Amino acid sequence: MAEPIRVIVAGATGWAGSALARGIARTDDLRLVAAVARSAAGRRLGDALNEPALDCPVHATAAEALRARAGVFVEYTKPDAAKANILAALAAGCHVVVGTSGLTDADYAEIDDAARASGRGVLACGNFAITAVLAMRFAEIAARYLDHFEIVDTAHETKVDAPSGTARELAARLGRVKEAALGVPLEQVRGPREARGARLNGVQVHSVRMPGFVIGVEAIFGAPGERLHIRHESGESAQPYVGGALLAIRRVNRLVGVHRGLDTVMDA
Image (tube, rainbow, N blue to C red; front, top):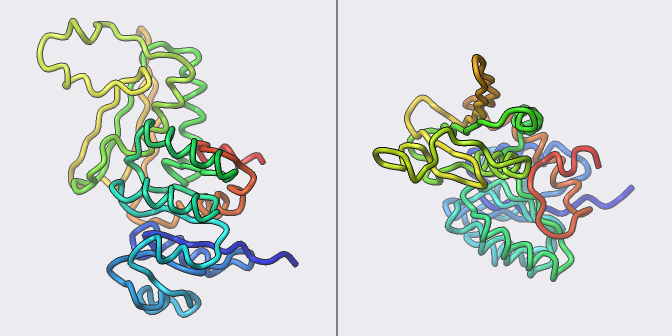
């Protein structure tokens, strides 16, 4: 039987990271060897999460956690720490799975250079939920046939990154299909141009942040006399993201360089 894949999770006590850590504990082919969480540094992760099966140390920084010999580093922290953590993990010889949102295309270009130089893979997923992956696939199909489309990105009021990683990934995918048509060019808009959203990869993206939302993204397509809405909406639990994240951990070592989207490895 093959040795379990040794995994480090950064952000292991957070909303998504803790659910993933518990998911890893229930597997036979993955082993969590270290965690990163400043709030629980110096403790065992099992004590912090009340999960006895998680017998690994929690460190304050990625640099400390990377002293453990690991094959995959999972980044689930904050946008301001994510890039440095990813680059440190690549330098330590790890493949990387990225669940943190807020990284820019320029960030990923730098990460791609580092990943290719080290011969490692980086799988960046704006959303690990299978329904989100399907929504993106369906939206890509719709963009082949419809010229007018925009994205609405919704989240809770304390989410600091806008657009979300899910919305950024969707904009990148749709932009590769075609640039969205505009009835009125942005330079001809009367009033604040920001009212039309931010243009990412040739697509208008609108971010809404307020209580009552968790995480959602919607691609809206319009044509004369008809309209199509393709929407993914997540609930309060992080459980829908666990299965996709486990799949990403198991298959990221087949990649070299940065790859965007869980479906990169779903058919592998």
